[in-house]
Structures are given as C-alpha cells and as structure tokens.
Length: 542
Image (cartoon, rainbow, N blue to C red; front, side, top):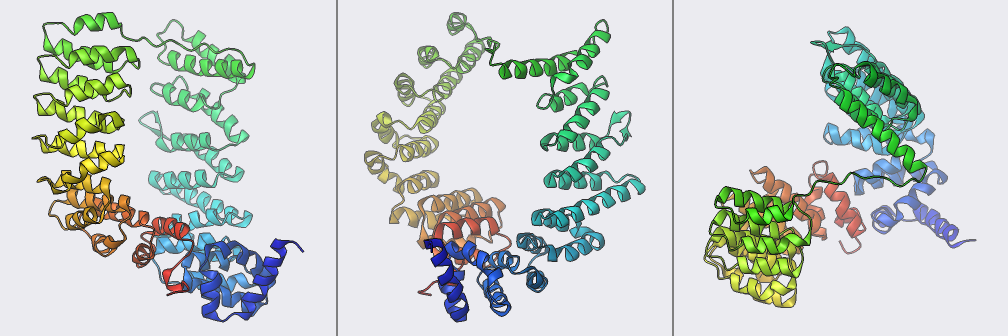
C-alpha cells in the first residue's frame, strides 16, 4: 500500500471516529486536509458525510460549500440546501452555491434567474461556476430567453449587454451560437451598427472557437466599408484573420482605390498582420519598421536656444530617447538658467539607471530651487541606488518638506543598514509625510507607533498612507486600530485598511476580517492560504 493510500485510510478512519471539535480542529480547519477530505466524503457512510459538511460550514462557509458538493450525488440536495439556507448577502450566497459545483443547485438557481430580476445574472453566473453540462445548458437557456424577451420588449439594450457578458464568461460552443445570433441581429442606431452587435463580436473574439472565428470574420468583412467602422473591424480581425480573407480585403482596396477610401489603412493593417503571421510560420526573418528617433545633434543645438520654451521642449524630447547618449545632454540642461528646464532634466534623468544619471540627480539635489530638488529626489527614489545614500541622508535636512519626504522614500527603497540608520532622525521630522515615509521604511516599534497615531489624523490621505504602511511593515500590534479603520468615512482609507490586514499574516487579522466574510472574501482567502487554516477559533490552542 502506498503512502498516499495509507494516509487516506487513516483519514477515513479518523473522520468516522473523532468527535465534532476534534474533527474541526485537527482536520477541517487545516487547508492541507481539504482536498483529501473531499475525495473521501463519497466513500464514508451517509451520516458521517452529512456530519462532516455541517461541521465544515461552522468552520468556514466556503469550505462547507465545497464539501457540500463532494458528497454522494443522492445527498447533495440536502447539503446544497444547507448552503442555500445560510444567512449571508445575496451576492455571497450565489458565490457559495457556485462553489458547490453541484447539479443539485440548478433548480434553485433557475428559479431565481426566472423570478428575481435583481438577482438574475448572479444566479446565471453561479450556474456557469458550477460548470457541469446541465448547469451550463440551464444558464444558456436562461440567457437566451432573456435575450429574446429583451427583443420583444422594445430592445432593452442594457439587458442584452448583460447577456453578452455572461455568455462570454461561459464560453462554450452553445454560448457561441447565441453570441453569433446577437451579432448578426441587424439593429441600427442612426445608421450605425448597434453597441450590442459590436459587444457580441468582441465577446466572440475572446473565445477560442472556430465557428465563432468564422462567423466573426464574415461579419467584419460584411460591414468593413461602413463609415467609422473599419477601425473596429480591423481591431477584431487582426488577432484572428487567416489568409482565406486576403482576396476580400484586396478587393475592398481595389474597388475603393480612387475614392480616398477611409478604410484603406485599416484593411492594410489586417493584411500586414496576416502576412506577418504567415512569415513567422515559415520561420522567415521579420522586418520591423525603424522608429524615427530625434536627431541628438539637433537637440543639443536646441539646448542653447535663446527661447526657454524651445530648450524645455528639447529636454522633453531627449527624455523620449531610450539611449544612454542623452544622459550627458540632460546633465548639461541641469545648468540652464530657467528652472523649468532644470526640473524637466531632473525628471528625465530619473528614467535612467546609470551611475552618470545618478551623478546628475545628485547634482540636481543641490539646486537652489526646491522644485528641481523635488524632481531629483523623486528620480533617486525611483532608481534607489546605494551610491546615493550619503547625499540622500544629507538631504533629509532640506528646507522643503516635499523633498525630505521623497528622500525618506528613496532611502527606504535602498534599504541598506546605512540607509535605514541615516533615516532614523526623520521619525522626528516636523512634517507628518516625512515621518510616515520614514516609519514605513524602518518598521521598528517606534515607527509602528507613529503609523498607529496617524490612523487618527484628520487628513484622510494621511490615514490612508498610514494604513498602507502598517500593512507593509506587518504590524500585528496595529490590528485593533485597523479594525476601527475598516469603518472609516473615506473609501480609500477603508480599501487600504483591508489591503493592510491582508498583508499582516496573523490570526488577529483573519479574525477581524471574518466578521464580515462576504465583504472581504478575497483578502480572507489570501490570509487563510498564508496561515494554512480557515479560522483561528478552530486552532489547537484556541
């Protein structure tokens, strides 16, 4: 007997022997046992299988839903009913029903789809998540009926768009057939092709279906020469077009050759794409068009132009050249008398990582104008090179709080022992943003204290930054304050708080989020995976 068989046999015996609490703590709460339990459930006696599902629903609703669909088919009507009976928000309920993957849920979902308009699409998506042949068939039947009903009732476009998105997600051949029907339904808005037809076409383009591809190519070619449509048609055709449509595209070009044909460029784009694919298939070398780079000699001359706006434009153009040769020219521009040119030069240098670029930014960090120093600090924060550590530490004394804040950020990204040691005084800076950036980088107990206090600041941007930083440093001690921040009046603060709790891999974070499972389900699942269990309440030492 293999080791896997031995483990399965032991699990089989344990499930039937252990008491409720023991089963929940030792097996159901541990993520590593979820799949083995799901595989064994059809083999145990009915009473044990039902007991396991009930206990699993107490531990975690998603776990319970998964196991509800893992028992014998004849028991699934009972276990799925338990899932349907859970008191959760409608959206989360349909997620749970979808997780069961059970055909026993189909009657409930079809009934909702037909009778509860506000939940129709949630029920249909759940059918798609179940994914069995019967569930998908029921989903497509419901969507087809909604589509035909919308046509009968003055063409309700929003309803049909929702049908299209649902069919795209299902993506089966049966779904493709309905999408083709919608695409070919000639509905016009002021002689333009309707949005629903175009959306159905775009949905077909995302589904890997030969019948869908053929129908889409025919449809695009049919309307290619319509005003303002050739661009859309070309975008749809380029990923899927094959040599078989080359004659029709060439015919379009020939027939309209003397009429300034507005679709000519788009037809040529499709032909180029087909030719390129054919060349790749034959392993032929590809010719790539050379981009027109600005002439560096001309730009260098423009750096000496008497008009400051011309010099500024030249610096911007230099920034668009991805070549190390422009760095000396940008360094030269750092000496310009006009602050706008110097600032722009510092911004552009931040896009290069060479030592010469860093040297230029260090020079700009000494500029008399705070805006130039700001751009230099921003560039050094982006590059985060260790060679800039000493000058950045000195810049923590800059008179501009904005510069000091960016310098703290740069030192945090460098994150060497010397950088973090030099950053320590910034924890006492007069400016809150400097303190926050320093605290986020250092992550010490003193730093966490500063960040926790900032969660109560009147400025929502500061509260938001503090929440995010607490997550970055993994501050378990801040979980109580973060729980309060979950109800902050500012939506960004709330979002960053959820993100922070998701990064603090600790039972305290998971417990806090589980109080509103349906709202934080994605973050909860990430934390559960990191911790290896579903609920702190069912841990051995709880």
